[in-house]
Amino acid sequence: MSKKPFPLEDDDEALMKRIDVVAREKGLPSLTPELAKNNEALEPRSMKPIKLMVPDYLFRELSMNAADRGVTKKFLILKALQAAGYRVEPEDMEEDGRRVR
Image (cartoon, rainbow, N blue to C red; front, top):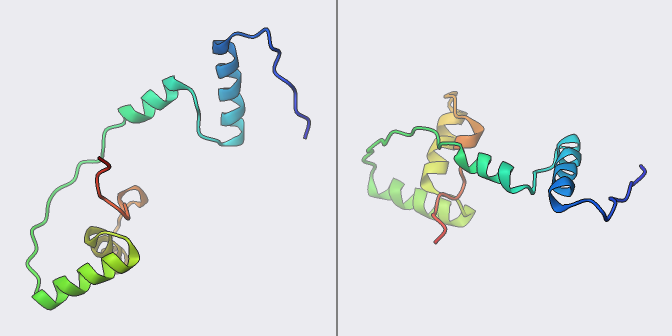
């Protein structure tokens, strides 16, 4: 693998384009602001709520298991539905759904 140095006379925009090309070729995430904006523009998948009443012992067990594994109860339920044969897309399997503040 030969590494070609970037000429120092290139301006920042030209360098960012060249870095983006190399990143795409190697399957790496881009560092360019334009691509970051495009990724943020993707709308989240539409979700519907399900209200579910469960016995206290099951709620406690789900809560403890989720806490032990560092995941949400939603993740555990989706994982169980997936194991039962229901289609659950990988991008919907968010282990930790807490919001960053």
